[in-house]
Image (cartoon, rainbow, N blue to C red; front, top):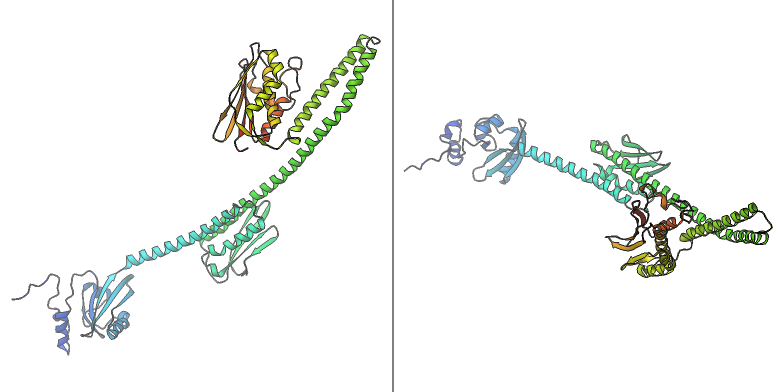
Length: 488
């Protein structure tokens, strides 16, 4: 009984093979080389000289037919596979396509089966992947360079010299061929070079203005290699980042110098104010003393105008004395401050209320406050701060009985203190003016004083890295607030 023939198996293959001296070969091809004729991939059976069988895709690919000589393109690899009896895989380029050929020798029969597969799309995909990986690696190298420069900028103490030297070391590894390139940075009449620096014809450079000076970055290849378009962008980006860093450092350095000079000037000014106001005390006392003596001795011997002149002179000298004392107090805020200690603000306020007891009784004022925090501060200055704010609340009272409430509120990073009254209030347009030294909103006849109290309060709060402000409405009282950072 004949076996049922499987679909796709070649029949009568010996009819397609030309006459041969050895008819046994043809018969063996028929029995042993059962290749599917409908296989879309090239399939061949060959010996060392000729094509024993080829399906249609194989014939089309190699432009052959059974009995032809082996194509020169695969001749050597076929001979090798048959000679060493080991399967070999080889890729070939043919007709603008790429094929992978699996050449399997049949040792006993001295021929080989060849199975081909079109891998063109796979090779293109592989090539694109390799290109993408290469580009990705190049981008990573570029970003590593730029991030490295940014890391250098994080060091606030780094000098421009160290910055440029360190940047120079980051440049070669960021290029496509790091082993055969060298670099130079020129800035402010100084050149920074890699150890292997050499000027060649293969150059990439970029210039940029930095603080009114020109900085040039140069990259040279020691061999004829192309520069990528991305590398042209990279060299510009390196220069631009260095420009920002250097200009920022220059600005910071200039600011530090300015602050240092300002601090020195302030110290000199504060010392001058203290010394001047202190040294003026004695001659002023003499003026007041002798003017009062003149008034006492010659009061009845002078006319009314002369007595008025003497009175004005004494009054003016006393006002000047008060003004100098205020100026002395203002200068002492920074020149005679005590080291900060943790103090209980409630206990300080207790002492302030005690000091103001006479004025409080005279005005029938009601002052209330609850628990207050303990913070790092100068006790004397905090007393002066509260005393000035409460004294102002008593001074600028309305016709109502004064009601003053002191409180403190804790936020996530500071304590906010409030001194609230029911006095005459302040117009909004004067909210900033009242904190400036010697600025007054009323005449001395209406309300005595030199206009220095709130300026002193501002200076005390500033010294604790805090801030002071007012919230008020005319006729409805005022609330003076000051905030002190918890970590002042």
